[in-house]
Length: 262
View 1 (cartoon, helix red, strand yellow):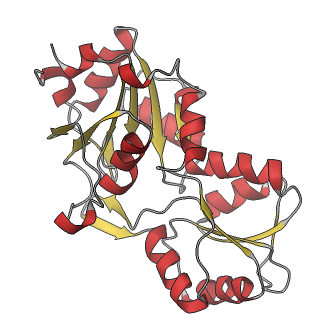
View 2: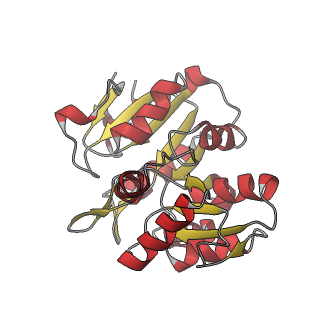
View 3: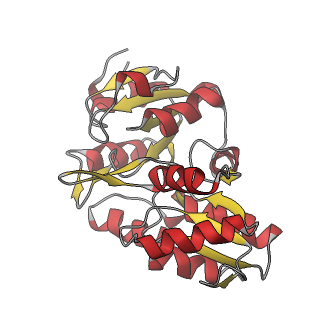
């Protein structure tokens, strides 16, 4: 039996697992289409916020994956839902890219760069990060703004390596302000897990989570009792960075789901 036959539900990370940077992981399309043809339930889950769920849907469809937009979740979606339900019309500032900021604005919150007005600070991947943004966030936090993050990844995989992600920004602000992050909404948070469960006929015994990052993907599986598979196509792993989290399987890539015998 291979892994594709053992499980009924599959939770896939995206960047570093299905694709890396601008390139599809070899045979990832064959794996997904094979699972869908076999009637398996699939959900794609990303901590990345530089595109919308619709953007990721079209990206994957253009690579030939036979998927539906409803099968994709990113941390922007999760944080939007939480803020809409709990901080309607509140004023926020985000260290994040334009796509992320626009989605939060569209969920009924107001954007400001004035530290005296800001009530919520949101942190996520920002490839346009500069010192001014850090200082706006720091001053708002010193004024008592809430301290939230869409995700906590330290780095994000790209074609030629990795770039700094939200975790590195969070660390800098925590040291600068002596404030601790209050909530985050990506993997491995319960907010994200609840969103995943709402998309599946969830049973932890027949669910496999596949990802490239120990401290988010594998941690979420360990935390909620799901088997996990760690692929080697994404971020680098360091021996002192696992924090006790351990995958059920080690795979070269998602292609091993079809040919890995258990």
